[in-house]
Image (cartoon, rainbow, N blue to C red; front, side):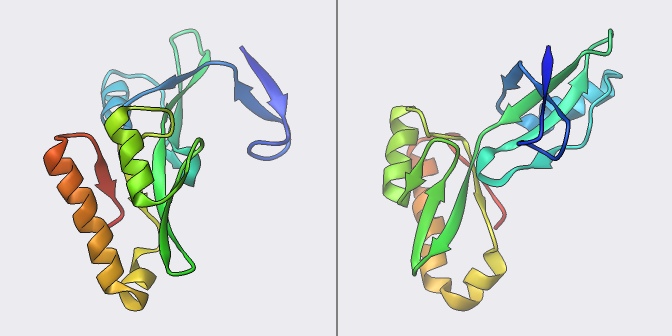
Length: 146
């Protein structure tokens, strides 16, 4: 169950009709490989999440995908964005608390080194806000890239 497209990852790409949205994609990837399942490397697609392709015993190719929200710095503001959402930290955390579309457990900071140089205080403030949210809502987000 696939179709060819030039719009996703280059010419004549085999796009899967069926993808599995998962939590803790690294664990799934490791467990599949340890079980002898063919699995490609995990690929980071930024605000479209992270994914990997794997095959069943008959050679049918499937995709496992975990949504991630990336944190970027735009015009001296930290913005949170993914496939369904773009906005402030507070707006994103409201989505996570309400478990609505646009919420993702994985929060990834892009270009953290330049932020440390340009706005260390603002960066620390955002990280502390996320850590406090996680303390108030245990295991609700996973912060990567810091």
